[in-house]
Image 1 (tube, rainbow, N blue to C red):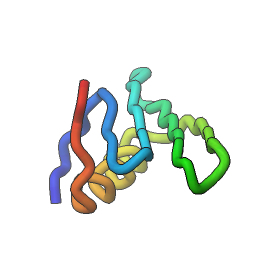
Image 2 (spheres, rainbow, N blue to C red):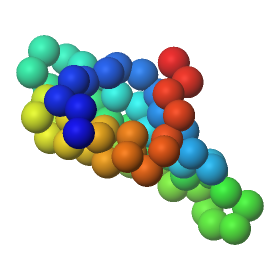
Image 3 (cartoon, rainbow, N blue to C red):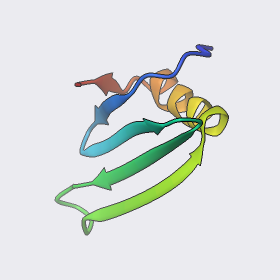
Length: 67
Protein backbone atom coordinates (compact mmCIF):
# COMPACT_ATOMS: atom_id res chain seq x y z
CA UNK A 1 0.00 0.00 0.00
CA UNK A 2 1.21 3.49 -0.91
CA UNK A 3 1.31 6.14 1.84
CA UNK A 4 1.89 8.99 -0.60
CA UNK A 5 -0.83 11.35 -1.79
CA UNK A 6 -1.18 12.42 -5.43
CA UNK A 7 -3.27 15.37 -6.59
CA UNK A 8 -5.06 14.79 -9.87
CA UNK A 9 -7.76 12.82 -11.63
CA UNK A 10 -8.20 9.03 -11.65
CA UNK A 11 -10.60 7.18 -13.98
CA UNK A 12 -12.05 3.75 -14.65
CA UNK A 13 -15.01 2.81 -16.83
CA UNK A 14 -16.98 6.06 -16.54
CA UNK A 15 -16.07 6.71 -12.88
CA UNK A 16 -13.89 9.78 -12.32
CA UNK A 17 -12.34 10.69 -8.96
CA UNK A 18 -10.38 13.94 -8.51
CA UNK A 19 -8.25 14.97 -5.55
CA UNK A 20 -7.23 18.53 -4.68
CA UNK A 21 -5.18 19.25 -1.56
CA UNK A 22 -5.83 22.29 0.66
CA UNK A 23 -3.20 22.14 3.41
CA UNK A 24 -4.09 19.19 5.64
CA UNK A 25 -7.48 18.73 3.95
CA UNK A 26 -8.37 17.27 0.55
CA UNK A 27 -11.38 17.83 -1.71
CA UNK A 28 -12.54 14.59 -3.34
CA UNK A 29 -14.97 14.90 -6.26
CA UNK A 30 -16.58 11.85 -7.86
CA UNK A 31 -18.56 11.58 -11.07
CA UNK A 32 -20.11 8.49 -12.61
CA UNK A 33 -21.20 8.85 -16.22
CA UNK A 34 -22.58 5.65 -17.68
CA UNK A 35 -25.27 4.89 -20.25
CA UNK A 36 -26.81 2.40 -17.79
CA UNK A 37 -27.33 4.81 -14.85
CA UNK A 38 -28.09 8.46 -14.16
CA UNK A 39 -25.13 10.81 -13.83
CA UNK A 40 -23.88 10.87 -10.24
CA UNK A 41 -21.79 13.65 -8.67
CA UNK A 42 -20.45 13.97 -5.14
CA UNK A 43 -18.02 16.21 -3.30
CA UNK A 44 -16.45 15.76 0.12
CA UNK A 45 -13.70 17.54 2.01
CA UNK A 46 -11.72 15.23 4.28
CA UNK A 47 -8.44 14.85 6.14
CA UNK A 48 -5.27 14.07 4.22
CA UNK A 49 -5.04 10.71 6.03
CA UNK A 50 -8.56 9.71 4.93
CA UNK A 51 -7.89 10.90 1.38
CA UNK A 52 -4.78 8.70 1.15
CA UNK A 53 -6.83 5.67 2.23
CA UNK A 54 -9.55 6.55 -0.29
CA UNK A 55 -7.04 7.05 -3.09
CA UNK A 56 -5.20 3.80 -2.33
CA UNK A 57 -8.50 1.91 -2.69
CA UNK A 58 -8.88 3.16 -6.27
CA UNK A 59 -5.21 2.56 -7.11
CA UNK A 60 -5.57 -1.06 -5.95
CA UNK A 61 -8.71 -1.41 -8.12
CA UNK A 62 -6.65 -0.39 -11.17
CA UNK A 63 -7.82 3.18 -11.76
CA UNK A 64 -5.61 5.18 -14.16
CA UNK A 65 -4.22 8.61 -13.28
CA UNK A 66 -4.90 10.99 -16.16
CA UNK A 67 -3.67 14.31 -14.74
